[in-house]
Image 1 (cartoon, rainbow, N blue to C red):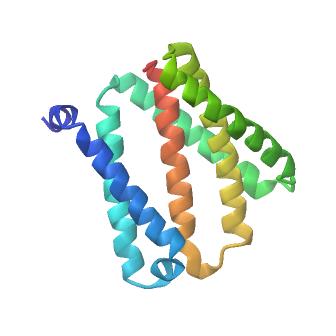
Image 2: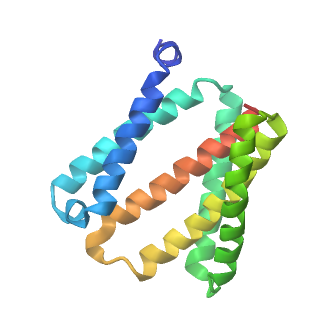
Length: 178
């Protein structure tokens, strides 16, 4: 019944996304919100609840097999990327070059997708977003390890949570062929 409710009221997806982005901006733009207890926990809870509704609304349009495969792939990819970030002494400058090139390519592709809808172009965009999000996971993990202070644990959690959800949703879009 909840799945049918979310399918019929898909606007909740957009409401949850707007609430989540607003809370994320309040945490990232006003650092004192991320460091003040219990406000940081309340805002992180609201963000997590909003994005849970967003993901729940999104997955209603996919088969359960695709959801399980996407979740498994997301978990394996995240664990592998985190292990790479923790164990390697690799400089991230090469990754930033690739990330910048992908970012520059994505915007015209998204605009073309709006004008000339194409399933193949959509799959290419999803694949490139998965690669770009993987780069962000490595960078954010290194950022948490080396640059964020202990007081910035909410920001670190928020960064990785957004990356994981982004990765899951685009892998699911590729797997579900939607």
